[in-house]
Length: 525
Image (cartoon, rainbow, N blue to C red):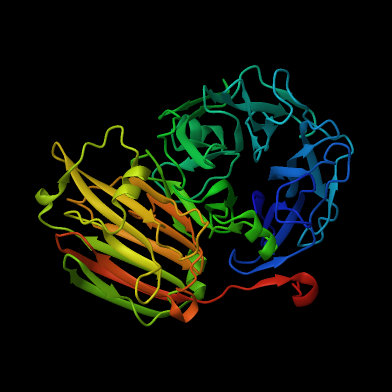
């Protein structure tokens, strides 16, 4: 499931996604799957929105985006692979706007509306974004690409959404980053958690009330990077505050790719959804009959320091909460475990905060130039430090043979303290032949002033973790064989030599959401 076009329309959330009805792989038969929901939690699967049937998409309907035009008219832009194996951009509209679920879509007869630019390889031009409307009455989109090894966000403009012209310069480009795919470009409010419509008014830009986020997917490693900066619509100029490198900000440091955001006017927020890809084999895909999962939807906003995004599970998850357990001010001595009982550990939502004292005992570490993923992997969840590892053992078997550890370590250097967050999958399953990567990143908090918080969503084989109130996120895809159902356990742990205090813990069992098929379940108006 690579997500193409999430959107909100007339009280219904729509999720369009890459879907192959014939096998669990990407090939030239990609359809646009379509599901709908009233609450982003419970979904009903509809028939595919469209299939590869025309010369401009006969070899696959690939990723794209949705835009709501004036008059409350939704449209879709998507990449098609044509008869010449060229990636071209196409337009589709709903067949019947009176259908509340927009089940059928009609492709524009004049497709493609954007052809391959000069100097671009035939398979390196894809994934048009949600469009934004300028005060000059012109629509804008970007399309991901590369020239040479320079990643590019090509900028296109149109007055009628059908006839598009390429701008003389790209919105942004960076050398030696390779092809950019699944780009996203959207405004975020300064000093507020509220979302902003993609077509933000220019007076907001001029008064510095918003910043703009440029997100790009880098194929190597399948990672989503993002920049925060200022957008000048008059000069079509984007100036990021940070540089795009392999050490740049990422939305998530684990299995989380091809993300797409949309503005939700019902709750005045911006929602982010991504593809959680697999860590097992092609043979496993075939045996299951599917591959790839949907991440839990996140609300995103600009941190108060304006240096990064904050991500947090949407509030609707509370509809699924039951069997809450909680406690405060529990000391975890070095080398100790505490089982969190009274909830269903295989399907849970847990929030925990740690308070540290005597930080002068923290280990020394020079953070410059360090590969944090490698550091987390080498130290793991079992190597004792001073402050850390401490955190959660999710999807753990009773004897800890299996466990997915999400934890922190605290270091110091020249009077500053650094909080490292890791997700260690090395013992997540007794199965062989799995990718069991350990992920890691710093969390931008000061443990002298702030408690170290962790929220983790556990759903049988997906573990999504949010450190520091959503400043650092890590998603893990795991395949336990022992820690399944009632045999799964959840622990708070501290394997460091210094004690830590759990200032507060709240955990819930999470009920199963409903995934329905329209023909058998029904989705009435």
